[in-house]
Length: 333
View 1: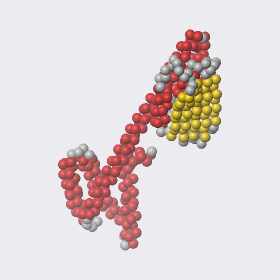
View 2: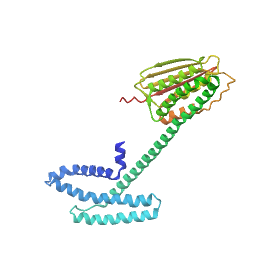
View 3: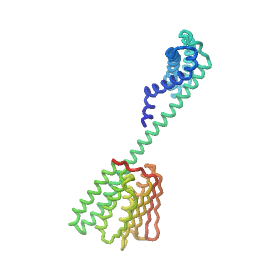
View 4: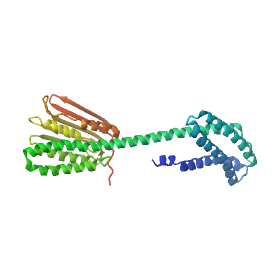
């Protein structure tokens, strides 16, 4: 990233490039000239005398002729200025080389200079366009990712408010404690969505708290949880499991004997998550908004994680499987 920033800086880029080119020229002719008995300082002086007018000519042509006229599709003006400039430049350099004692400049040298200088400028332009487009893409992805993460909060609150409403009618005395529990969970969501990654350990703790809340609310709900692996060494984008668990809790609650099976395994930066819950085969009074699952799918794409997500229904059981490969290693503080 530092190299890219240096390249984007006009003065630093040109300083480094010109220093390297001068060094290569000096090394290339040093042995031959030194063998003839000439001083190294005089050699470097002559190289600079010949090199810098060449550099100024290329810079002027690229910046004030190609960039301002060719790139803006002013072709007639471009060709007039381009040919006039390099003709005048050739005449100037012929006299310049003669009076500075550098010998005679050749037409082939000027032609090679024009072709190479122009080609490198076009190459530089393509690189800068790619960099600029990449920066725009990154900004767009960051904006979309921020929106997707923030979208989970109102979705969570919508489900929570619906549950609180039902509980306030049935057991109003328990509502204050339930609000405190929801407040803790919402606090974690707000903090987690400010980060790109959190530890899997934190995510598991949040899911356990979420499950605990709903098992307390619905005593019929049976939850089986299996977690295996080194959770403190791997990071994951925040709230990846929440939409899946939310749906499982919501739809299983309609059945006579609701159950949820959660299986999470982590091994060598690879994650395997399986969630099963029962639901009514028909006659459900619930309608899914679809926000949670679609949000998760899009976040997997935006994060660029190699993954496999499948959802299928087998009779009265809904099964979700999520596999993610090459998760980032946690940064130990």
